[in-house]
Image (cartoon, rainbow over all chains, first blue to last red; front, top):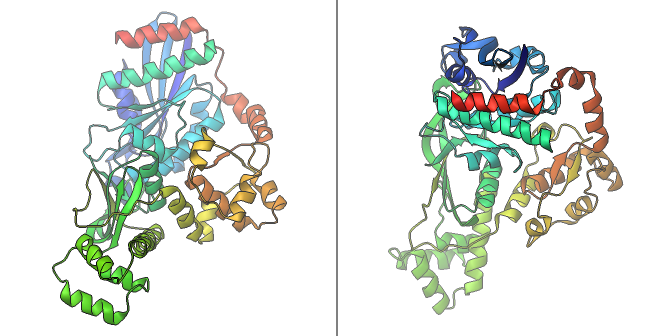
Length: 177
Length: 290
């Protein structure tokens, strides 16, 4: 059986776990723990410490694994391990929290350095009243024109499907190019 | 939908760049930050908007109006500050024209030979720049950018291209730490963005900036450009920062560095396993069917 892997990364609380949860056929194997720092606890109650793991079975011979990285910097030793052998990656950005944009850009650059694989940027939480539009995010994060920056609501399956499909189209285009 | 944030996380310079690139019309309001006692997503102190500190207005990506909340931004004060009116004249005009708006007042001053139209435009222009450079130096404060909001017809709007404002504002950012943080690695190179001719149109560069621009080439590292121009690390960082914020250059890896990264053990380990096109097509079909 062949397995392929995609990585879902992004800053703390950008919606990575929710993204995988929306599309995975299995209950996401999450390594969430209660948040220790008071600051982070105000943002959400639990966070991913090692990784999230979701699965999509295509047929008897092919399985897609989705790995979500821990968002906090102190677990960044896990990133490179998770990036190993990835087919492509998604950078999640919480569009409503400009304080995380710099971190998102830094994570994007880190993963680009790990492997020259295709990637897309998901402008998550577009349903939030304070969300920056994808066009504004492109300028704010200095994302090149050729890179797909997609509106996303991670809790909606169709939105997650669209992001994954666009990443797969990019992978296909690179193979054909 | 308004853009909200804190200039601690997304600086005024970056905001002006966003407004410029997206040719926005609207009003940016910066407030005093009042700590809420909560932390934001990055662990910073969460601030709520307090008293207004400044208001900056843009029309089609150009700066047209700016005012600091704690100073008199009226035409008389602006002309007095510019030396076009004496203190005595300013006092007299203020007493006589209490209810007159800036536009009407400008007509009266021109007709009475107190000031020429050119004096008024130049003085307002300088006032706007002073306000904006002041705002660009701020490192903290909640902001809101509201699309489409313009001041009333009684204000005199003087359009100013933002590219030069961004460059000059960036020139004034002297803090070494900020520059080092932004450009930590002088072994990176510079390249022109797409449509460089369009971006450079109407931009006024200093001699130092031209000297750097003349060496822009992905093969030249920033360090090499500094050496060729006899510039210190801070001087080159300052110039590159200004050019980059104005969208005139981009920082890229020089070719050698890219190759090194591609052949490093880390990249080899992280490289994707060979996957056939039909596998990707199967994945696409599966996800579509979910």
